[in-house]
Image (tube, rainbow, N blue to C red; front, top):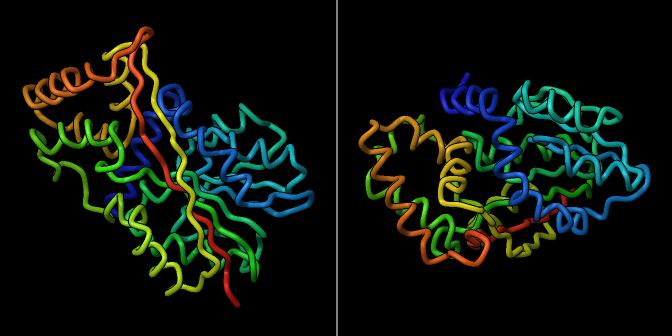
Length: 267
């Protein structure tokens, strides 16, 4: 198994519940936009890759779609099955799906591309599993220059951390650059490419809860957790200090905007 894929899988097995508790309210803010761009209809065959707790799958299922959710993490699939027992959830590797060619009308990936070693390979595999004229919809975080939350986190990591503590993988923001995303999608056989910005944001009652949430992520959290204690404390202190500007009457509110990209499988 690729080292980064193994790192991600192991992290999800440990952190699935924590991620759901801490990130779910943020990542869930793009689901309605995904549904809108996917044009989910009665009887549509939908695959959600990297399904997490299954929340998008449930909304597509409520619209009458035939839904399958898949994830590399056994623990995430356990949570999804517990949340929505009527929906089919299976273990799958996004880089090598077991589904037949042209099996689905719609494939969705909510922030999945941030957690794979080879983003292009995942998109090619999704294209294979899509019917002709089928549609893929995936979400990404905007780059730190457009995201106060990620700027705060990445600046702290960049200032103090050794980022080589986790295995190398594709640039987390490659597909957030829309010219790059469009060029790659066209190259591998997609057209009718659109992108929509969603002003997702993060609310946290305290600095400690915000930092705990960051640690519950895999790439960012893992990078921080694998530092020496002294470095971890420096990162935490800087995040706490930089958070102060986002304080309001009930805690902290900080923008973490997203991009939802939609494309059609060309003939």
